[in-house]
Image (cartoon, rainbow, N blue to C red; front, side, top):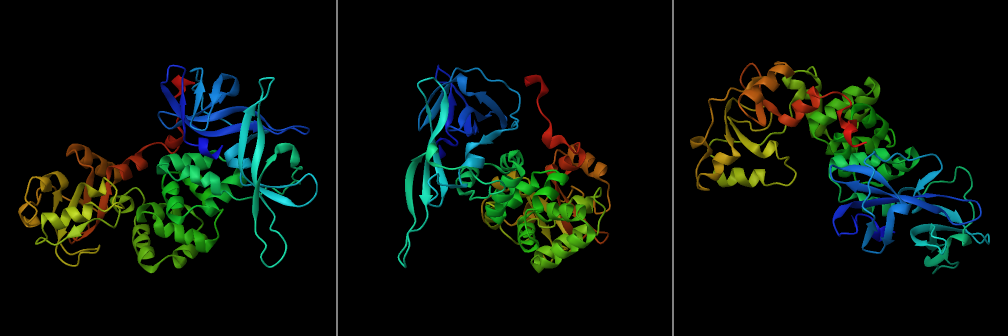
Amino acid sequence: MGRLAGRGIFDPSGDKIGKVRDFVAVERAASAPRVVGLVAEIPGRKRVFIPIDQVVSVTSGQVISNGVVNMRRFEQRGGEQRVLAEIIGREKPLLDGSGKVKIEDAAIEQTRGGEWVVSEVFVKLPKTSGPLGRSRSKVLSWEELGKTAAGADSGSAELLIQTLVDLKPADLAEALLELPAVRRGEVVTELPDDMVADALEEMDESDQIATLQYLNSDRAADVLDQMEPDDAADLIHALPDQHGQELLDLMEPEEAEDVRRLLEYEQDTAGGLMNPAPIVLPAESSVAEALAMIRKAEIAPAMASAVYVTLPPYETPTGEYQGMVHFQRMLRFPPHERLSALLDSELEPIPVNASAAEVARRLASYDLVAIPVVDESNNMLGVITIDDVLDHLLPDDWRHADDEGGS
C-alpha cells in the first residue's frame, strides 16, 4: 500500500479524479480488517472519502473508480483506522506468542465475496539472538498477528512521513491536523525541523499551540529557529509568558534577537506584521548580485519581488533607507548595471507604528506585494508582504473554511 500513496485515481474514461492519500479500514475480532474506502485528495487540496464499493480496481500504479465523488470533506468515524496513518508502523504481537513485529507495509485484496480486506502485512521480525543477530523481514497474513494490548499503540511513522514529504506547507499542515492526536504526535516528533516549521506557519494559533505541545522545549526552539521571524513572534506571543521566554532563551541568539525585536510592537501595527529579514544591498551592488540573492530557494516569492537599498549597516535595523528595486525592473537592465540607477525612490516606506489597515491601503493603492518599514530616523526595519496582511485581515478560522456548495 505504501506504493499507492500519492498515486492517481481515475474514472473509467481515464480522466484523473485525484490522488490516493490513505485507505480506511475497520478492524474485526476474528478476521482481517475490512477496507471501507479510501481518502482521496482532489483539486483544491480537499480530501474526500470514496467508498470502496465505488472502486473498480486497485493496482500498484493507480486506482480506478466509477467516477462518482461525494465532495463532502473526509471525516474519520469512530472505529475506523487509516491504514497508512495508523496501522503501518505499529508494533503488534505474533499470535503464536513468539514476540512482536513492526508492520512496515500492508496489502489489500478483494475476497471472493467482493469484500476488500487488509490481507497481508510486510513485517520486521525480532532480531535473532547472538552477537551477530539481525532483523529479518517477512510477509505474514493478518491472521498470524495477535491483538494489540490497550494503550500499546505507539510505533514508527516512517512510511507515513514518506507520503508527506512532497506536500506543500499548507497541505502538510492539513494532513497533520487530520491525523488522530496520538499519531499526529508521533509524526511531528519524527518530521525534520524545517517541515514542522513550514506546517506551523500554515496553521491557526490554536492548532500551532496544540502541535508545539508534542515537542520538548529544546526541539520546539529548534523548530522556531526554522520559522520566519514574524511567524515565530506571533506564536511566542500566543504562548504563556513563561513558556515563550523559555523558548526564546533556547533559540539561536541571532534568530531570537529578530523575534524579540518584533515582540516589542503591537501585532496590529506595521512593526508587528513585518519580516525583519529583507534583501538589503548597497547602492553600488550590481543587478547580477541582486538577482543572485533573490534566486535563493529559501526566499519566499513575495520577499523576492524586490531588493532594498540602504546606507550601512545592511542588517536590520539598517542605515538610512534609499529606495527599492523591483524584480521586473532588474530584468530590463544588463547584469553590470548598478542598483543606484534603478531605484524607485518615489514609493514612500511605511512607518513602523502605522496600523495594519494603513498597510493594507498602501499595498492596494500601489499594487504592491511588499512594502518596506522604517523607524522615525528612516532606518529600514523590515518588510511587510501581502500574505502577512492577508493573514491578519482574514477571519481567524479562514484556514478551515470549506466549500459548502460542494457538500
